[in-house]
Length: 253
Image (cartoon, rainbow, N blue to C red; front, side, top):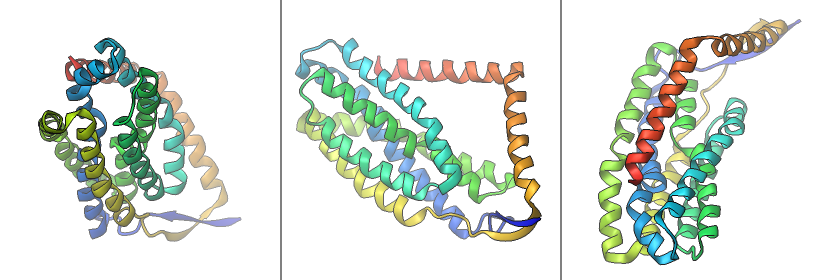
């Protein structure tokens, strides 16, 4: 029995709005990484001094944040597949802004760990991974590379912009004041861009057998199983893990 399936509109270029989404996500990813991740390295030492703990203990909170983000990636991915990125990324931006404010008010190492776990979860909702998923939904394969590269290049300047900015703010306002300013920047930039710019591609109904959807699930499952048996997949995974570990080590050292 035939049923309807949907495909993204304007398959040739992703639509003009698709490129506006790319620009918005490039900006929000830059601000997100700068405030939620790179600021931590600058504030690590003054936070440790204020909380009366070692820098090792404070660094552990960042590790907990990364682990929480990794665990949240699975349900976040499933949500993106079914509902798109607008509500998820807007909610994540609002929550991340609130967590930056809460971060500025911590007085114990336990409170810091709790806040950073929340930051890790919201990071999974607003940073590269959901941004890339939104872009993939808009663009066909021949245009995706350019769109993904644009976001990656722009967001690559997050550390260049926000580490000196955080240092300057911390020197004049203290680390708590610096976080309040970063929270204001994050909320003012990311929330409206996610809420007003991100949309689902307009669907175009096409007739297809009902079995097509079932076979699509089977094909994705088979592709995943094939990847797990491919040595190149594990080499790539190990390389990405090593890269992340090296980046984190240099950031907080």
